[in-house]
Length: 203
Image (cartoon, rainbow, N blue to C red; front, top):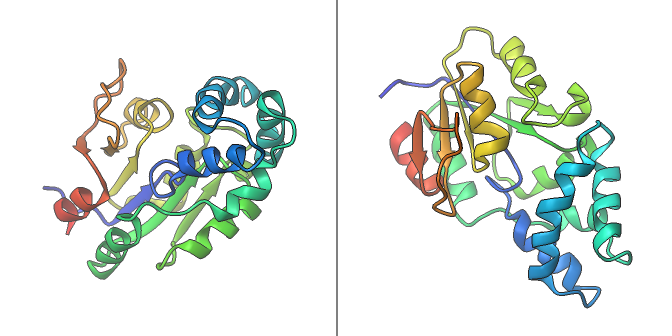
């Protein structure tokens, strides 16, 4: 096993349980959470085609599904998965530098970071690079900041993270929480069912 000096993570879906957060936001306005989540998965990528602040993406996507919902306001309450903080703490204790590459605005991510029990050495957001993954902007910027350090990127989304990481030759760990099949071009360097398994392998 290669000893990685830096591990970056996608945030929402990998570290944060965004699906539960989305469902709860819509259920708070008496809209079926499961129906909303299916619609969100379809609509959000359409809204993200041209860069705009993620707060606007949330506002437009939510309004297309159920106008009263306030997704941007709910985002700071979205919680980490139970395995997130213990795994991050283990990686930090092992001397690994940690980062986040996220399709979000700086201020929204700042609120989410209050849920984590470790600090991050590297933060790259859509606001900083003016694009959304699977575009390459996050990865190119991260490589500039990381330099030649041995780097692994870990993420739940095969489409948004594993495919572009492969295209750029970046070693990656797929956190396949839902037991999905890899997309064309999305076969990962490593595959784990959760963050505990990643921490077991990397420490």
